[in-house]
Amino acid sequence: MAAGTPVSSAAAAAALPAPLDIVGRVRSTTARVMEAARHVSLGTEDAFAAAASELAAAATAAGIGAKDGAASTSVDWDAAGWHYCGDASAGGPLTCQYVFVLDSLNWCFWPSATSMEYDALAVGLRKAVEADPSVFSAERLQGATAADVRGWLAPHDVPEAEERAEMLRELGHVLAAEYGGQAANLVSACGQSACRLVALLASRLPGFRDETVYRGRRVFLYKRAQILAADVWAAYGRLTSGPSPFAFRDMASLTMFADYRVPQLLLPMGVLRYSPALEARIAAQEELCPGSEEEVEIRAASVQAVEKLRHAMGGTLLSVELDWLLWQRGERSKEKLPPHHRTRTVCY
Ligand SMILES: Nc1nc2c(c(CN[C@H]3C=C[C@H](O)[C@@H]3O)cn2[C@@H]2O[C@H](COP(=O)(O)O)[C@@H](O)[C@H]2O)c(=O)[nH]1
Image (cartoon, rainbow, N blue to C red; front, side):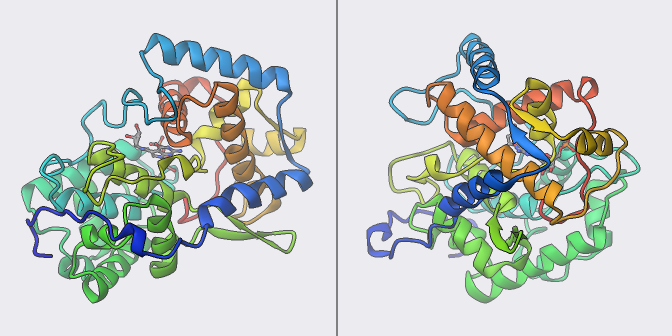
């Protein structure tokens, strides 16, 4: 597909074989972790009921809620206008290219000496693509350097700029070699399925393989692959029907995105509980090793807690929407929350 050509492909979805259910495995493997967890547990039923009713009341007050399992249109995705969505209403490919770059770089900002946060990433990349619409072409991504990344996000100190540039080169290579340079073509190959998109990202792009081993058994999290699928879906207007390749039919399958802001909020709500030793380590801002029992348990518990909260709220929101609600609440109240856990990782 040529750049600028409106993307549309009504799905050969039916013709595609069912995807490997790796998103289902996020739910099942995190449930298994929680059966054996020693450092993190879920709160009591009372704590879930209280948190659910408080969140549901806040959601209702904000006019949020969906009927009959349909996607709610009311949980903000881009209330502050951080993101580039310039050609999304026309179904163009540039918004998709932007989101792929965004979520290739959407991890671990806290080591930044300038307190860089997500909004700086989204806005910096938006300005770069507005100034030069070819800045994220597959050809240019293949040659991306740490200096490019720092330039887009200036004046911020960007943690792991070299590693971030490597992610972009990887993305540029795969897009150029297999998808005519266009992320939108990769999405079109997924037959309107967010789960297929997650599976494809995890299989083709090593940077999206957010998998670990807990006591000898595999655990699947796919934070950035899932947030990418949700961001693409939201950027193109949260379509659930019609011919657009971005009209994913299976958004209800995705889980929350297990990272460091949502558990920071869930802990004081009482729906997550840490052992005193773990709580002290996090309070002291001691780093947790990626793949350590403690770190995997925090992430697994976050997935399970959001599933449970969603059910306790009556199932009116998608897990993705509840994640957005919680993340935004966490962002608003982070100064008042206990410190988040710190793990140096490219996964989140
Ligand atoms: N679970 C979850 N984690 C999210 C997001 C987002 C942004 N999503 C957009 C879509 C809807 C929202 O309204 C946003 O417009 C970023 N993060 C993660 O947070 C961390 C950065 O935090 P801080 O440094 O404080 O900005 C980092 O791991 C980053 O990857 C989310 O939605 N859910």
